[in-house]
Image 1 (cartoon, helix red, strand yellow):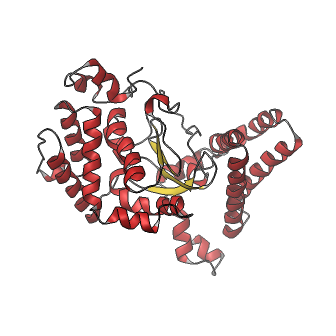
Image 2: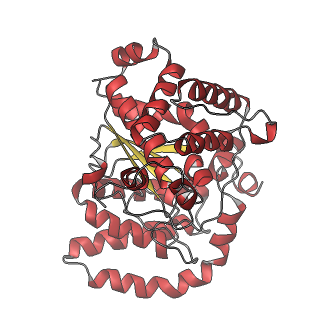
Image 3: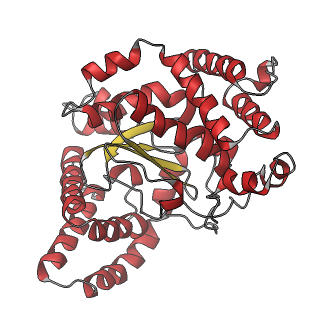
Length: 364
């Protein structure tokens, strides 16, 4: 109402699109952090300036700070603030392409001390989370997100559970109670499969077969003909994926790949699968590895899935080859400290090698 009264030419649809996705928690956090922002801005600016090697780098950072201040300046109209956001976004994109290390330093400073929202950054893979809570390396203490599953999510989850049960190498009981339906029921059945003695390969293959059943035999050749090896393959896949896998991972949006700053990335804002399971082993063997293999072997597009266990975000990058878990420097060692399955599952596995390979590389 305020925007419409100030500028009658601004449409209601534009207003709604600007505030969509901002939770009450985020709005309160922005308001309550105003005083802290004023106190910290000058020292952080000086600290960053002292680390600059050239006047060009100093000018780049100062311009980013100036654009950030313009986005929060209430004396400017909404259009001017949005233009400043766009300019800042493209400056960061150029930094990603030319100097990724510098990009992470600038973006982290903007997020941690100037309160730029993570969704406004081109990529957040190596950007620490802004929070006042104490966290451990492999634990997420951020508030849980409530996911409202619609009728289409329910249908897809029902089919997924049915195929998963039919294709599992061990018997799995499906709970018919409506209170146990949805993503939680699917995760319970995945844990049941592990307790029955399924190896990591059996877990991955069960999920792969399930996804292939959902795709049918018609989609992969159609996709390969229309998308694979095309210039738009990576970007178009990142646009379509939220609608295809949203019922499993939750809301996501296309972003930039950290490896080259190009389009073809996707950020899962707070992974539904990871939040509900809080289990690194289920994430690895029944989400990350099956997804990477499905896109590469069945659809002909390389994919690298990089979960962040501290924020429960997940970065998907198409067109980027996925390293093995043993050689991936981004895959952390050890178990999530609050994982509900770490002690329980250890009682149901068959060997020490099975235990070590469940959550982390067998070499660790």
